[in-house]
Image (cartoon, rainbow, N blue to C red):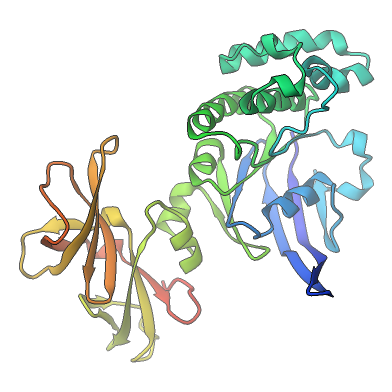
Length: 362
């Protein structure tokens, strides 16, 4: 397996805007290390540079600055046929005039090892529980979207890759097929442990498949960690609001006498070096809020009630003045829009963020 290291990697493209050529920074001074055998999901909004970063790791794009290393060797010094990259694109990228078996076995055929392909395909079928052998005689146009992606993954695995790269491979599949494909790919990654990077905008996909997640914004890596670490310890407002569905609740307030005070609640101590009047935003996850019957807890009027039967809770959207928040309630709660409720939380559930910079306040 391979350790992937990015050292201050940057990439800028030129884009034509109203007849004028303007530089667009796709990747901006990214440094990152992916341990041997890790599966790193790169998660971020559209246009943040995820796919460009993946193409830089694959050697399909050359960095303007910095270097990509495989086991401490600069990728530019490794011949393309020696890099050992298995890559799966959004649409599979199968040769349209080749049957699936030829696409899967082409790498082995070049190395006079085509006799190994049937056994590898059979093993992949056993792991995933999918009859991959039945697809081998079909042309890409005869395959569904899910089948094309399964063939593309099989093709990548038959290369005995050192590095596995995925660029949103399931984005064109419907929800049911996506869920099934995730399970299949998870089994394969466990059976064939290869250092992998998985680009996606789907949080559930990132959680299911990865050992770590990198949050990306505007060409930069904001934070790297496990899902639970990022969810519980976001470094800034962007990470806090990006991670988690539904999103974190935000309440504006100010510091006075080293305590935070908002419109609805307050009195919570914050970092002692903050001057009076400093604007601070408090974040509260929906599951941290609970229904209360105590008059001392803060009130709100229910605006919507959404049942989540599988998760066994109601999701409430509640408003009080300019503050709107989401919170969980038991499925048995008889609530409807217009009802007035009270909410409470534990003080250790609060996340404090500087309103100007968005940086988390310790």
